[in-house]
Image: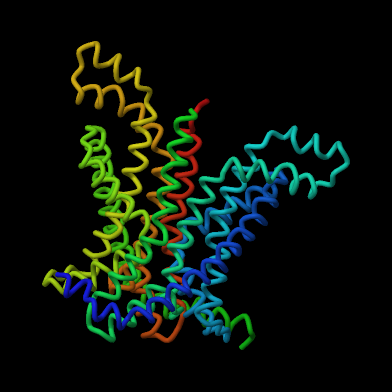
Length: 220
Length: 226
């Protein structure tokens, strides 16, 4: 069993490959999380206009990307766009797909956060002479973010897990590297090791989330 | 041919679409089968684990929390790959369909256990005590007093999570499941035209958009009333 799934020799041989994958997964996450947050912030600020003319199309936009599997979006960009003469490469496709997909999720969370701040806060801030943007940035958003912090964290965990999709379009992240090592060694060991690396990387976040959720329930 | 014509001829070629429509439709059937299996087994297993956890048997609870944490931490695609490429080494060779079902079912089980458990613990202790003091057994209290209150609370988060995980059926493509994306991709390489992919994308929207909108309705309908 150990010889098959956690073969020490194969671990030793595959470790540099897997380590490179881990580095790329971390770098990719550091790129796509802020990108998704930016997309979400844009959506949430637009939605805060509270006009149905703006809100309805935005809601449709968000729901569209919530309904659309991210892998399909990625394949569409990666395999579909070249037919229009646009070859973007796996990395750029991942960036665009995440901007659209995770942006929609972050946007929905941030919108709920902004909605949870009483309208009086914005009015009071505006009446002290702050511009709309200043009032948003300094008064509303800090409170909004605090109110939805567990949801933001939970979504960020999902985004980092989602970077494994990069393996499908040959971005050399952790899963991709592990599968390369697997096909070189004819052994499932590299994939098991990659799974353990993912677990060690993300388990602390899962624990933290569980505690935050329990605390939120206790507060009720 | 104008630019627009060339564009529609490439991405919305009706001839190619008509030719591969049956393939895409058979993919839709597979996607629905997979989704239903994942949702039913994942949620039932999650509920079963949450109920087991409420028995408060220490070692069993550690085991449950451990399993749940593992499947909350691992990317679903990693679980699928692990099952599909890993198990054959010990002479168990699940098909791509079974691997995807198992993987997504386990992931949904983990997330729904957390949600059900949060619902059960949110019911005030006094409710338990009051019900038990009227002579109801542990099981009766759980079934008639605690669960009805707990389940109502779990519906909005459970709906969102279920939709997110069910969309993951597209991941089955990686292990050769002939669901929508798989069918669309092979049709695209056979016809050297992206129209089947557009058709597949449309199929996903038709399938999942109503679910997302219904999820939004459920969210407001069962919202926590303060």
